[in-house]
Image 1 (cartoon, each protein chain N blue to C red):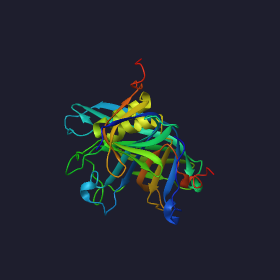
Image 2 (image 1 turned 90 degrees about the vertical axis):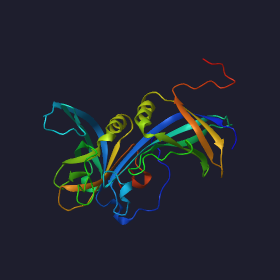
Image 3 (image 1 turned 90 degrees about the horizontal axis):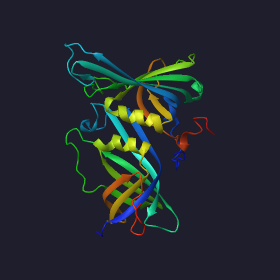
Image 4 (image 1 turned 45 degrees about the vertical axis):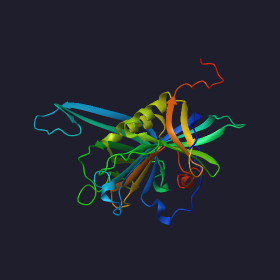
Length: 165
Length: 148
């Protein structure tokens, strides 16, 4: 599904602040099962005497912003269970992104709900081509990732920013 | 409301979007995921209406909307399975999907489903109310066609 219909009003000048667009080139999933210790409480990721950890690694390159265009990037996705809390007094980011200007190989970590594992695996395998990251635009690194989005297309509004026009 | 009419659609493309973000402070706590997240995930399908027949094939956009349990109230049971409407000249449909069937739908759209059959009745304000829908790999024969 390549055509993206419709255009919106011109974006706010701050629309692209702290925002990154990444084209996905390859991905892999990992699953690690290990014998649990008797002391570990049963929770998400623990099944009786066995522990399991799942995750993804995505490799791609940056399309936007221009300052980082064509840099390679590795994104390590870990999955969190329902016990993890977010918001005030808890975790206030869904990942971290290192994008120092002098770096040509960038790295990011991303945390997704464990329930999304099958969706992520299926869609990475079939339709998803792009990853959008919104950071807190911190001058220092690593920056906090506040939002992420996967898509198969780039909206027409983003074409110029992504260097596709 | 009229008797249900069958709308048969051939699926030409599908897409799935996933968006995760920290929820804004203004968002009610009971709407947030795990205290401070907002997760949205939905399937969009594009297809062509095969039945009822028209002189030209008519495109349609369909959104599969998962019924996500709300933290305080659980799943809100809807009165129907979705709606079909004409929006700005474009035929659109929203299909409500049990959350438990979301992954199945995704896997089968990727692997095998090619047709969607919707049973809808004429409702209010030009909307059609969907009483049932089903996906399939092969098209069910119409009354005028011999079965394979």
